[in-house]
View 1 (cartoon, rainbow, N blue to C red):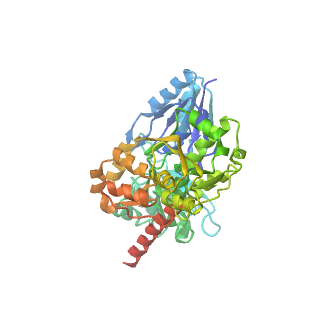
View 2: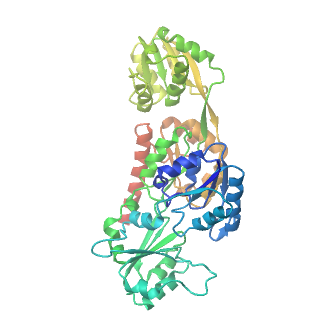
View 3: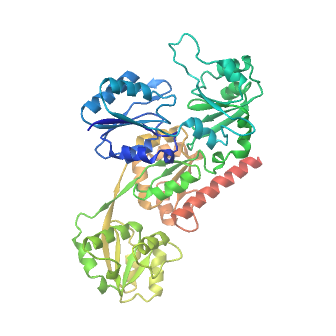
Length: 512
């Protein structure tokens, strides 16, 4: 049966959406979402779901409210399960109730799933508790942008000014001078602490702490614009003490992650936990081999090899998929030694019941080749499950040493350029500070999608991060020197190197 679900998406941090909202979003036939709903939520939608963007930005309405109502009714009458995703909470200064009233008029079933409102979340992320035993025992949520058709304000300014409540104004930046003046005129002291919190709970969060009398002038000087919340009350004085989110070392730093979408989650999670604004731009996609017969045959003959050498996590995963399809598991490696190019690959093996016999100190093909040479690989049979196109250093060195080497392509890397236009816009707007490259193919495919000239134009404010020397060499072939490279060629070490760079930059700026 058709139904419309009004889902509160929360204030911006994607982890603040409720489990129920996520479940309904994953199962909906149609998704209708607002500007303030984090676009990452769309990744949870079914591949065949209808997606409609109906938000507004800076007063520019993609779709007027009456047309949004019509859309919800039309899709529900078409027999669809509709997820109406709204920023914050659907009923807290949103127009959820108006949409529900329209659904009722047409006899359409609905449910409302509350969301975390920005009125609570944004101040909390800024270190401002809305209530406190010493300062405020109540809180008022107030719109700073009333219905323009009203002949007079519905606010009782004297009541708001006389009380000791914390006041939270939604959409108040445009009318900030009037709000401040009305409260002071009604008796609220001009030295009352006041704060603006912009883009609360997101990597772009920014706070401005002032007083009721000065906050409008300070907001203009510091160019505060929507979406921002205004908080008025003594609780604001706790900001400096309790502020935690804005102390994240990478807060506001735009980082491009070029890794494949299947592998980007660990990088993105690490960077976002440090406050970074991650721009996922997967330049490669991992695809299985069209002809799996050679892999199946090699899997059946594992006992014939002295060594099996895995050079990536993708190689482990795709090879194991074939094993499992054949009803095989780790026991197939009995009597065979296994090498992994680095700790992530070794961990991938360990999760499948295989402990690597050899992991080199430096995680490049040259070092794994030398390690096997030191282990008397001459005359031994070596299987290398890897990407279809990869560096030939490892098999060539082993062949030169007298090993019998069989290179087995178990997956393909395909170029991806989706999102190039959006990334170019972010570069032009100065939103990008770091670009990370985790392999030579990410470099090559990046410059196939993004012009070298664009990077050169903004080079002074960009830091190019390479996971290791091989990736760095590929970057140099495109005319750029890398700025950051970890001592150990792993994702966690790359993130740490980026963090060290950002932290040192903050220290230098603080000293000057």
